[in-house]
Every structure is written in C-alpha cells, then in structure tokens.
Amino acid sequence: MATEQRVLDVTDATFQTAVIDASKTKPVVVDFWAPWCGPCRILGPIIEKVADEFADDVILAKINVDENQQSAGQYRVQGIPAVKAFKDGRVVNEFTGALPESQVRAFFQSLAPTEADRAASDAEQMLLSGDIAGAEARFQEILASIPDDPKAVLGMANIFASRDEFDEADNLLKRLPANRQAKVMRHQIFLEQYARKHAGEDLRGEAAANPSDPRTRYRWGLMLAAGGDYVAALGELLESVRNDKHWEDGAARKSMLAIFEILGMDSTITRDYQRRLENVLF
Image (tube, rainbow, N blue to C red; front, side):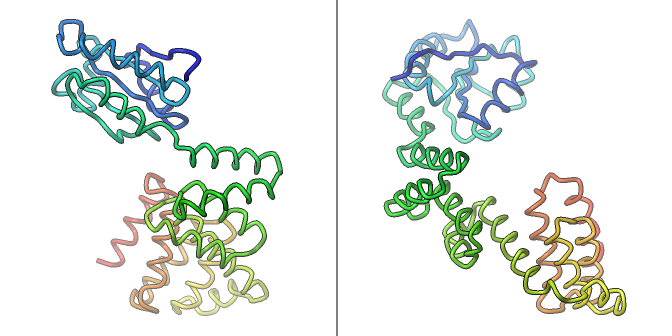
C-alpha cells in the first residue's frame, strides 16, 4: 500500500518535465480531461483512488485540455477522458472513456513493477554497492524462473563481460533479440574481442598503405570503433563500402549499422552517415 497520494496538475509548459522526463524513472499516467466533461467527472475519483494505491510505483498527472490544447493535440486526444500511460518518454498504453474501477486498476497494475522487476532492481543496487556475488545470485534466481527477463539478462551479461566471459554474455543476450540495450552490448562485446585479437597488428598502417582495399579499411574501422572513435570508424567503413559494397556479404555496411545502433538513431552522427551510406549504395 502506498504511503502518499501523488496526483500532479500539469500544463503545456510543464508536460516535458513532469511527464516525459519523469517517465524515464517511473511510469506516468496522464488523464486528459475538461471540467464540462461528464465522463471525466465519473472517471476522476476512480482514477485518483486507484492511483493512490499505486503511488509508490506510478505517477498520476491530470491535464485540462481546454487550457492546454498543445499537449492534447500533440498526443491526438480526440475524445475525453483520454488516459495515456508513458514509459521512457513514450506512450505505452491508453484508453478512452470512463472505465470501471476494476479495469482502471488492471491498467495501473500492468505498469507497476513485478516481483522480478523489484528483485532485479535490488540486484542492480547490489552491483552499485560492489556486492557482485550477491547481485549475481539474485540475477540467476530471476533467470531460473524467467529466462528472458530483460533486467536480469542485461545485469548478468554485464557481470559476465566484466569477467571477460564474453561468450557467456553473448549467449545470454541472444535471449533479447529485439532489445536495443542487448543489441548494443553484443556489438560492444564483438568490438572488444576484435580489439584484443588484433592488438598487435598495424591495422592503421595497412589501411594507409592499401586505401583501395575494402578489407584494410574495414579492419581499421573496427579497431577505431573498439576505441570509441565512432566518427573516424564510420569514415573508414564508408570507404570500405565505397571500394566494394559487396565485400564479405556487406560486412562494412553491417558494421556501420551496428555503430548506428550504438550511437542511437537520433544521433546527428548517425543521421549524417546514414545519408552518406545511402549515397554510396544507391
């Protein structure tokens, strides 16, 4: 049971901070309403009562659409009450109309952390405090019952990688094929292994001596990426593609796509090199 009620009145001016930014830490349910709306008056007491029960895990925000039309328009509110749940800055669930209390409670329950989520959070705190053995035991306990739990998979993979048990980490991360964090970690593991394998080779010299060879440019590009110099890496990989876009089944192109994932698709570097790659390919 929650210890306090957290119902926020938000406006267009505060929406970014109170909803979007806050949802990156805890789910935020936004009730788009208006004083003249009969169903809003029915839903209001219900959603506030339920929100009080989940106040430790979910934030409830209310926004008057008459006074804040920008936010209502941005999130395509066409009928009210409109209730939208935000996680990590985006809408993950929603409903329109005055639902009965049981359905509203189920809506909030779907957003609240599960027991596995809480256990994973405990394990993450153990890691931060240096209790690696305790964290590992907790992650393994979660994975025994939920093999593809994202937090446990990522947490345990981090522990494996910290011990240079890269194959174990990579195999574990394969359980989350659509998870961006898992994909990024797999890319970084590959780059770390590549850098260690070729540490004694003069890949830079080879690329300089053979600038038209897609292999030398590719190899030096990967080494640059392993060192975190993604801009220079993308430049080398792009030249590899330019030299021969079909070399090794498009290996350089695929490596560029992996770096795009590491940087994020909203990165200005990603967008710049996406355009450059398209110009070379097409």
